[in-house]
Length: 78
Image 1 (cartoon, rainbow, N blue to C red):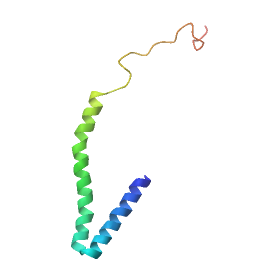
Image 2: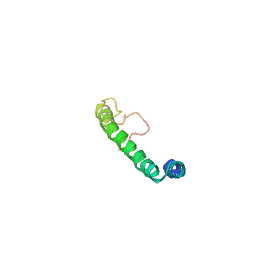
Image 3: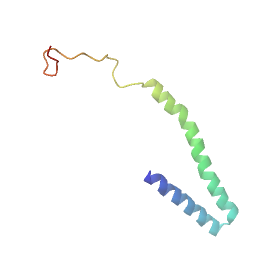
Protein backbone atom coordinates (compact mmCIF):
# COMPACT_ATOMS: atom_id res chain seq x y z
CA UNK A 1 0.00 0.00 0.00
CA UNK A 2 2.76 2.40 0.98
CA UNK A 3 4.76 1.47 -2.10
CA UNK A 4 1.76 2.31 -4.29
CA UNK A 5 1.37 5.75 -2.69
CA UNK A 6 5.09 6.43 -3.11
CA UNK A 7 4.87 5.31 -6.74
CA UNK A 8 2.00 7.73 -7.43
CA UNK A 9 3.93 10.61 -5.84
CA UNK A 10 7.03 9.78 -7.89
CA UNK A 11 4.89 9.56 -11.03
CA UNK A 12 3.34 12.97 -10.44
CA UNK A 13 6.72 14.43 -9.51
CA UNK A 14 8.23 13.09 -12.71
CA UNK A 15 5.36 14.64 -14.70
CA UNK A 16 5.98 18.01 -12.99
CA UNK A 17 9.69 17.75 -13.75
CA UNK A 18 8.99 16.96 -17.41
CA UNK A 19 6.46 19.83 -17.59
CA UNK A 20 9.08 22.26 -16.31
CA UNK A 21 11.75 20.95 -18.63
CA UNK A 22 9.88 20.06 -21.84
CA UNK A 23 6.39 21.59 -21.59
CA UNK A 24 2.84 20.60 -20.86
CA UNK A 25 2.35 18.27 -23.81
CA UNK A 26 5.18 16.03 -22.73
CA UNK A 27 3.92 16.05 -19.13
CA UNK A 28 0.54 14.77 -20.31
CA UNK A 29 2.41 12.12 -22.25
CA UNK A 30 4.16 11.03 -19.06
CA UNK A 31 0.85 10.88 -17.21
CA UNK A 32 -0.65 8.70 -19.97
CA UNK A 33 2.38 6.57 -20.86
CA UNK A 34 3.15 5.06 -17.45
CA UNK A 35 -0.33 3.66 -16.81
CA UNK A 36 -0.50 2.46 -20.42
CA UNK A 37 2.78 0.58 -20.03
CA UNK A 38 1.61 -0.90 -16.72
CA UNK A 39 -1.67 -2.02 -18.33
CA UNK A 40 0.16 -3.71 -21.21
CA UNK A 41 2.50 -5.50 -18.81
CA UNK A 42 -0.47 -6.62 -16.70
CA UNK A 43 -2.29 -7.93 -19.78
CA UNK A 44 0.81 -9.84 -20.83
CA UNK A 45 1.21 -11.37 -17.37
CA UNK A 46 -2.41 -12.53 -16.96
CA UNK A 47 -2.01 -15.64 -19.18
CA UNK A 48 1.27 -16.53 -17.49
CA UNK A 49 -0.25 -16.25 -14.02
CA UNK A 50 -3.29 -18.25 -15.14
CA UNK A 51 -1.05 -21.00 -16.55
CA UNK A 52 1.00 -21.13 -13.35
CA UNK A 53 -2.14 -21.46 -11.25
CA UNK A 54 -3.61 -24.08 -13.59
CA UNK A 55 -0.47 -26.20 -13.54
CA UNK A 56 -0.02 -26.01 -9.76
CA UNK A 57 -3.56 -26.08 -8.31
CA UNK A 58 -2.49 -27.11 -4.83
CA UNK A 59 0.45 -28.09 -2.70
CA UNK A 60 -1.14 -31.16 -1.14
CA UNK A 61 0.90 -33.62 -3.15
CA UNK A 62 -2.22 -35.43 -4.31
CA UNK A 63 -2.75 -37.31 -1.05
CA UNK A 64 -6.19 -37.26 0.55
CA UNK A 65 -6.35 -36.02 4.16
CA UNK A 66 -5.78 -38.84 6.67
CA UNK A 67 -7.98 -39.50 9.64
CA UNK A 68 -6.57 -39.21 13.14
CA UNK A 69 -4.53 -42.18 14.32
CA UNK A 70 -6.36 -43.98 17.16
CA UNK A 71 -3.09 -44.26 19.10
CA UNK A 72 -2.36 -40.54 18.98
CA UNK A 73 -3.22 -38.28 21.94
CA UNK A 74 -5.35 -36.10 19.64
CA UNK A 75 -7.78 -38.95 18.94
CA UNK A 76 -11.23 -38.57 20.45
CA UNK A 77 -12.16 -40.82 23.37
CA UNK A 78 -15.61 -42.47 23.15
